[in-house]
Amino acid sequence: MLSTSATDELQQKLIRQSPIGIFDSGVGGLSVLRHIRQQLPDEALCYFADAGFAPYGDKPESVITERTLLIAQFLIGRGVKALVVACNTATAAAIKLLRAQFPELILIGVEPGVKPAARLSHTGCVGVLATSSTLASSKYQALCAQVQRTTQIRFIHQACPGLADLIERGELNTPATMQLLETYLRPMLQAGADTIVLGCTHYPFVEETIRRIAASHLLQQVELVDTGLAVARQLQRLLTEQHKLSQPGHQSPPLQFYTSGTPEKLTLALQQLLNIAPTDYSAQKMFAI
Ligand code: DGL
Image 1: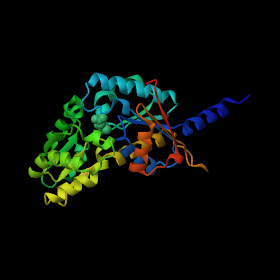
Image 2: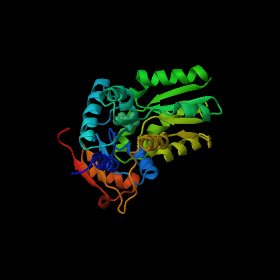
Image 3: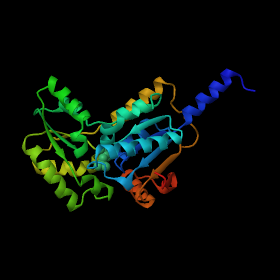
Image 4: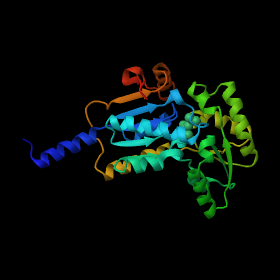
């Protein structure tokens, strides 16, 4: 029989080897996953794309909360040691509830980077691109009010219906995407925004297109704020503090992908967005969720 300390040690080892759960309404969370892979290359990752229910951005908060809880339960059932809600919309709707339901779990949400944007802006005017649901949430409004109490920053908010759908379809720089982005960016660029917050995890995938449009408005120096790296660093800090970092191994750690949509679409997205080949992971459709 194993002694208590040997059992504890074995349990610690198992926890360290457990995967990190990451989820989003679709492919957007992959913009966070890429930073997590870079920052924590020894960690096993388990990603859930809720593509069967995307987009979240114009759904009622109650629906987003219900989906978020279901997916969190599913990933916790896969034994994750930490959960990253790689979706601004789901974080705004449900992170409080998740924290109350799973107080022991390392849980990290994402929110629009309005604080770093306020520090970066020279013109004092910051544009925020996000979903309608994120912008309307009390969590986001409280964050903005907090920044505005201490700075003179003017925020120009722009909800972007249709943009996450185009990105889900892999249309990163098609005429349709250019046109939609031009419509969303023009008012903030004309108002003098020199810093733009990418307040939805899908939007970093159209960063190049945004830069091209900003350049066509003769604004070469526009700063784009994406919080993916900050989220990966926060995850690394919490795992380190709790002695849950995985140890380097001989093989690359497993990557698992689940979707409530079509696995073939997720496979294409992984290739197009992150250059991950199908031989490097397993992908499954989840019918039960
Ligand atoms: N990627 C998600 C976010 O960060 C939402 C996109 C959507 O499903 O509307 O808010």
